[in-house]
Figure (tube, rainbow over the protein chains, first blue to last red):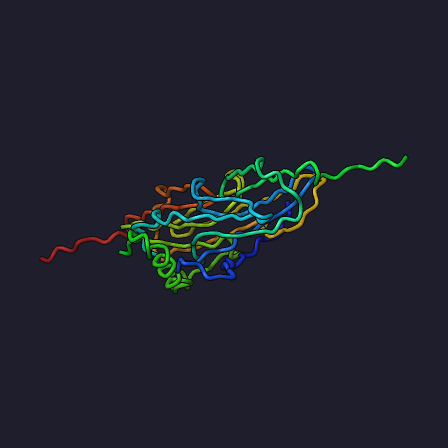
Length: 131
Length: 140
């Protein structure tokens, strides 16, 4: 298999419209978004985050993910050489279509969060038959 | 040793500690292998070294780790597949092959290296080789 080599992506910091009350920095997770006839699927990379520390919600058509890093794991570790920083993750997307909020599914595996946002019946594409 | 027990400033203290060691000279003289991916942080934990590598979404079968004396090689591939018949709106996650070799400034005991992969994080616990451990010198 001849694959291209991965380039390291610099972590992007969250630049909110308002400043957060927390002085610590948050990062923007790299995200893939695609949709089929039934759902919008949002895939975010949040390495190092545990299931219980993720909050996903949809409010006024805005999808928000917030993930808190459990930094207790770094207790007793003294950095000697570093190439990346760690922190919380946060990202919001404005949704254009109508989403069935009660049926949103979230799966977290190997640091990758997959959100499946089913479309409401009225938002699904309809095939128009020509009479 | 830094502690991060105060919840109010803990994360900020950790971030500052990591920043202060960004690309420190610790690995500078070693060849950095073929590529810069994946990014690696190296910590000291007692007498052991711990390398923490962010590798979200890599399947274990696509991840290989080799160790020889003071050289660690991490290679594999990261795959992202989209189902057929979808329209893709955004594509930010990186995909492809990676191959990285780092040479540590001290020899490690290759047989005793422990690797864990959880939540997209690879942690390598690297005990120093017997020859690299400090010895008490008796004064005669």
